[in-house]
Image (cartoon, rainbow, N blue to C red; front, side):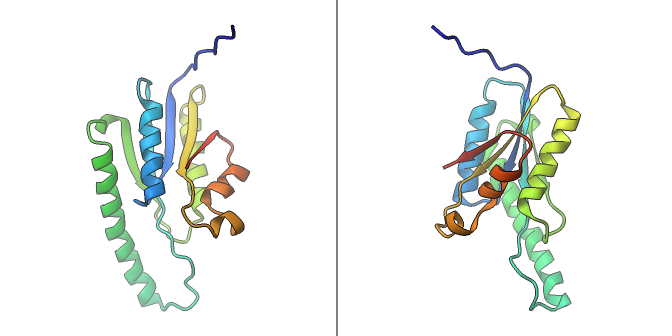
Length: 155
């Protein structure tokens, strides 16, 4: 009988989170993965604007304010989901709304790996709920192609 080797080291999870149903499932999965283990969850929110080619500087500034309010809402939602685990998670908002989401998650994972080189760092994301993403790509697909750390894609 083969006995699985025990996993060693602490577990540090980077969760892409925007308050959507797939993100909620990803955070639930991260909570389950961390149960009974030492480590933490970094909840990372990346404001996303598909295109700004047609927007004035005033419109972009207004959107920055709106994204700040959305970040506050997303933070509150994540805090509710993580109630009782306050010391084991933190919330991070990418400051640039024009940043590529996979790049932000990979950067967060690399920073954790640099701080905890002998532990396990994993990115956790929800799968896209939009069928078109299966054709043209999604955050999960991009991460699967480029991440230097293990990736969990939650259906």
